[in-house]
Amino acid sequence: MDQFIVSALKNRPKSFEDVIGQDSITHTLKNSLKTNQLPQALLFSGPRGVGKTSCARILAKKINNLEPKSSEDFSFNIFELDAASNNSVEDIRKINEQVRIPPQIGKYKVYIIDEAHMLSNSAFNAFLKTLEEPPKHIIFILATTEKNKILPTILSRCQIYDFKRISVIEIQSYLKKIASESKYKFEENALFLIAQKADGSLRDALSIYDRMVSFTKGDLNEKSVADNLNLLDNETYCRLGKIIFNNSIPELIKSYDLLIKRGIENIQFIKGLGDFFRNLILAKDPKTLELLEVGKELKSEYIQITEKLLQTKLLEAIELINRSEINFKNVKNKRVHVELILMQLASIDFDREKKNSFAVETYKSSSPNNEIKKLPPETDLKKNGSSNFLKNFVGKEKNDNSIKTLMEIELPENEKEKIYSNNLIKDQIHTKVSSYSLSSVELKRTVTHSNKKKQNKKALSEARFEFKDIEKTLREYIEQLKKEGRQNIISILNMNPVKLDDNNNVIFTVANEMNRVEINIEKEKILQFLQKKLDNFKIKIKVNVDEVTKDEVIFSPKEKYQHLLKINPSLEILRKTFDLEY
Image 1 (tube, rainbow, N blue to C red):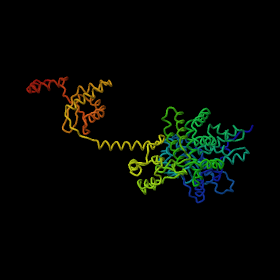
Image 2: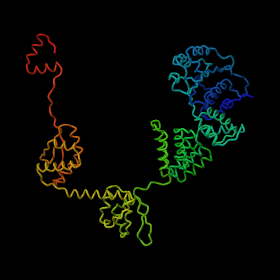
Image 3: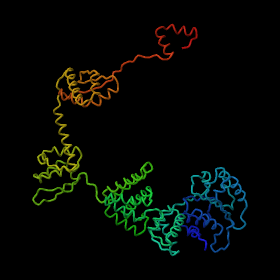
Image 4: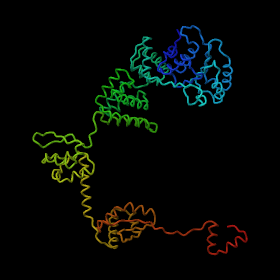
């Protein structure tokens, strides 16, 4: 059996043209070679599996072999070191000694130091001088995935190239090319899942690709790949999306239960749901459609789904998912947390705008033809004012018993009172308000409350009374409390004296803070009882704590001495004469 070569090694780039997703960097390096402006120290940084080491090797070969037709091999001029296993000061000293020797053939010796961030601080310091002033025949190429761990003094001596993550579409296209060359059957959505799982790393994508080829025996389909990678395919998210849009909570919870039994992780499910709604928003507008990193078939399906959906509702859903993802770590019951999110999503009306706060679409007319008429929009109410609008509206439908629809308009509080108190419609609003209309009930409650307030203001009186009337009324209130069995407040009211000042303030003087709190709780009820019984609404209640001075208790010898000193000051002379202590 022939030895199997993994795709990552089999398809390693051999020229700058073969490098995927790093066009700006490869173009810069090629131009540097052509113009002979290549620095002697380069640093390649970026995520794993994006082509740093491959570009370093290609560049190392190109430096000495600038003529494509030349058959000379300059491999002996390339030295590749792994900083993870050569990270001591001694290893760097050996390099410092080796770089003094010029190459036997070719113009340059190239040192590739992979995983450069693994060098120790002392090794970096030993390497500084050589890196700052290298011999003319030496070029250093450092590669690292963690640029932040390299000393700033090293970074300042290198020309830095930042490699980016490879896009999902570029990885998918490359996998498609490899699968076609290998004559494997594949679905584009299956390759998309592999590319998505790789998270921008082509090496990881090729490793997953090899595993999927072995699992599916060369038939890469979306369902098999999704099951093996423990991912949800796009078809599943689309199906869940349709359930959400239909506001079917029981079916949604049941579908989620099946996914849990499949072993899908909660956090991955939330992230996938967020990506799904993001894709829907991108598909909603032709300007953002090109940002959608999916296949043509899936793109068409997204466009079809979003036709009846409102963008504002999609944004609301993404915001909800984002908040839940942030709070996910702090939640103890993860499953209930996710189920709550799903129920909240299924409660959103994605295909319908929230009703305008001023406009009501239609109302039933009492005319013989039972015509459906429309109320004016919000702008007309603002321009003409509520009173002008009512004159026109009520004039046309004077005998309409369905005026209750007017009350369902959600207006600010001042407008509600203004409309209700208008003489033109007072006689038109009947008691036949629909008990099923929350807005009408709220308006009725508001008007009733405002009318009561007006009546109370008119009814305020200031009948004269004396202190004995206060005492008598309080006794009546205490009798009422006895019937309720409230012994605690009764005891407090009986124990603490009451006074009346010139400003009609009833003053309770209590012995401690606890009694003050108890009376304050009952204060409003006592006040209402006094005002009603004495027919005086100017009465107010105040509660004061009586600060009783406590006898000081002497404990320490010093305190005893100070107390005796106040009685007889000559004691201080006695203490100093005999050098006494307290």
